[in-house]
Length: 126
Image 1 (cartoon, rainbow, N blue to C red):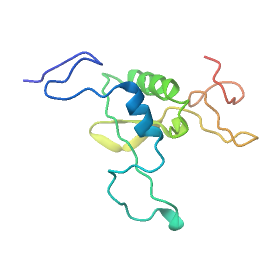
Image 2: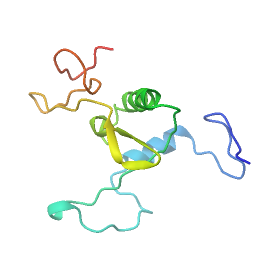
Image 3: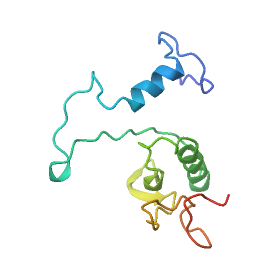
Protein backbone atom coordinates (compact mmCIF):
# COMPACT_ATOMS: atom_id res chain seq x y z
CA UNK A 1 0.00 0.00 0.00
CA UNK A 2 1.34 3.41 -0.96
CA UNK A 3 0.98 6.20 1.59
CA UNK A 4 0.07 9.57 0.08
CA UNK A 5 0.43 12.89 1.84
CA UNK A 6 0.06 16.51 0.93
CA UNK A 7 3.09 18.55 -0.04
CA UNK A 8 4.64 20.15 3.00
CA UNK A 9 2.86 17.82 5.41
CA UNK A 10 4.75 16.15 8.22
CA UNK A 11 6.68 12.98 7.52
CA UNK A 12 6.32 10.47 10.38
CA UNK A 13 9.59 9.97 12.22
CA UNK A 14 11.38 12.82 10.43
CA UNK A 15 12.37 16.09 12.06
CA UNK A 16 11.32 19.15 10.07
CA UNK A 17 14.10 21.57 9.15
CA UNK A 18 13.13 25.26 9.25
CA UNK A 19 13.21 26.86 5.74
CA UNK A 20 15.93 29.35 6.69
CA UNK A 21 18.25 26.47 7.66
CA UNK A 22 17.54 24.75 4.34
CA UNK A 23 18.49 27.93 2.46
CA UNK A 24 21.67 28.23 4.54
CA UNK A 25 22.63 24.66 3.60
CA UNK A 26 21.86 25.18 -0.08
CA UNK A 27 23.89 28.38 -0.25
CA UNK A 28 26.78 27.12 1.95
CA UNK A 29 29.83 27.04 -0.36
CA UNK A 30 31.57 24.31 1.67
CA UNK A 31 29.18 21.57 2.85
CA UNK A 32 30.68 19.96 5.92
CA UNK A 33 29.00 16.58 5.64
CA UNK A 34 29.46 16.00 1.91
CA UNK A 35 31.54 13.03 0.88
CA UNK A 36 34.45 13.90 -1.40
CA UNK A 37 33.69 13.36 -5.07
CA UNK A 38 35.99 12.57 -7.95
CA UNK A 39 37.33 15.53 -9.89
CA UNK A 40 35.05 17.18 -12.42
CA UNK A 41 35.70 17.71 -16.11
CA UNK A 42 39.07 19.19 -16.95
CA UNK A 43 40.09 19.35 -13.29
CA UNK A 44 37.15 21.60 -12.35
CA UNK A 45 35.71 21.34 -8.85
CA UNK A 46 33.23 18.46 -8.52
CA UNK A 47 29.51 19.21 -8.68
CA UNK A 48 26.58 17.23 -7.35
CA UNK A 49 23.35 16.97 -9.35
CA UNK A 50 20.07 16.77 -7.48
CA UNK A 51 17.44 14.48 -8.95
CA UNK A 52 13.97 15.27 -7.66
CA UNK A 53 11.48 12.82 -9.19
CA UNK A 54 7.93 13.99 -9.73
CA UNK A 55 5.25 12.23 -11.75
CA UNK A 56 2.55 13.26 -14.18
CA UNK A 57 -0.01 11.33 -16.20
CA UNK A 58 1.17 12.85 -19.50
CA UNK A 59 4.13 14.60 -21.11
CA UNK A 60 2.42 18.00 -21.33
CA UNK A 61 1.61 17.94 -17.61
CA UNK A 62 5.16 16.88 -16.76
CA UNK A 63 6.63 19.71 -18.83
CA UNK A 64 4.27 22.24 -17.20
CA UNK A 65 5.21 21.05 -13.71
CA UNK A 66 8.95 21.04 -14.49
CA UNK A 67 8.71 24.55 -15.96
CA UNK A 68 6.82 25.85 -12.92
CA UNK A 69 9.34 24.28 -10.53
CA UNK A 70 12.32 25.62 -12.48
CA UNK A 71 10.82 29.14 -12.57
CA UNK A 72 9.85 29.13 -8.90
CA UNK A 73 13.39 28.40 -7.68
CA UNK A 74 15.28 29.98 -10.59
CA UNK A 75 16.37 32.89 -8.40
CA UNK A 76 18.95 30.57 -6.79
CA UNK A 77 22.27 30.80 -8.67
CA UNK A 78 22.73 27.03 -8.32
CA UNK A 79 19.61 26.29 -10.38
CA UNK A 80 20.17 25.75 -14.10
CA UNK A 81 16.55 25.98 -15.26
CA UNK A 82 17.55 25.82 -18.90
CA UNK A 83 18.87 22.31 -18.39
CA UNK A 84 15.58 21.02 -16.98
CA UNK A 85 14.29 18.01 -18.89
CA UNK A 86 11.44 15.51 -18.63
CA UNK A 87 11.58 11.82 -19.49
CA UNK A 88 9.25 8.84 -19.39
CA UNK A 89 9.79 6.54 -16.43
CA UNK A 90 10.42 3.58 -18.72
CA UNK A 91 12.67 5.59 -21.10
CA UNK A 92 15.03 7.66 -18.91
CA UNK A 93 17.47 8.08 -21.81
CA UNK A 94 14.94 10.10 -23.91
CA UNK A 95 14.85 13.66 -22.58
CA UNK A 96 12.38 16.41 -23.49
CA UNK A 97 13.76 19.92 -22.90
CA UNK A 98 11.60 22.24 -20.76
CA UNK A 99 13.28 25.64 -21.32
CA UNK A 100 14.93 27.17 -24.42
CA UNK A 101 18.30 27.92 -22.73
CA UNK A 102 19.81 29.79 -25.72
CA UNK A 103 22.78 31.92 -24.70
CA UNK A 104 21.91 35.63 -24.95
CA UNK A 105 24.21 38.65 -25.27
CA UNK A 106 25.61 39.51 -21.86
CA UNK A 107 25.94 35.88 -20.76
CA UNK A 108 22.35 35.28 -19.63
CA UNK A 109 20.22 32.45 -20.99
CA UNK A 110 16.75 32.46 -22.51
CA UNK A 111 14.19 31.62 -19.83
CA UNK A 112 11.28 30.97 -22.18
CA UNK A 113 9.75 27.57 -22.78
CA UNK A 114 11.43 25.21 -25.23
CA UNK A 115 10.17 25.72 -28.80
CA UNK A 116 8.71 29.14 -27.88
CA UNK A 117 7.49 31.59 -30.51
CA UNK A 118 9.13 34.97 -30.88
CA UNK A 119 12.53 36.19 -29.80
CA UNK A 120 14.47 34.78 -26.87
CA UNK A 121 14.44 36.77 -23.63
CA UNK A 122 16.10 36.57 -20.22
CA UNK A 123 12.65 36.86 -18.64
CA UNK A 124 9.80 34.75 -20.08
CA UNK A 125 6.73 36.51 -21.45
CA UNK A 126 4.26 34.13 -19.74
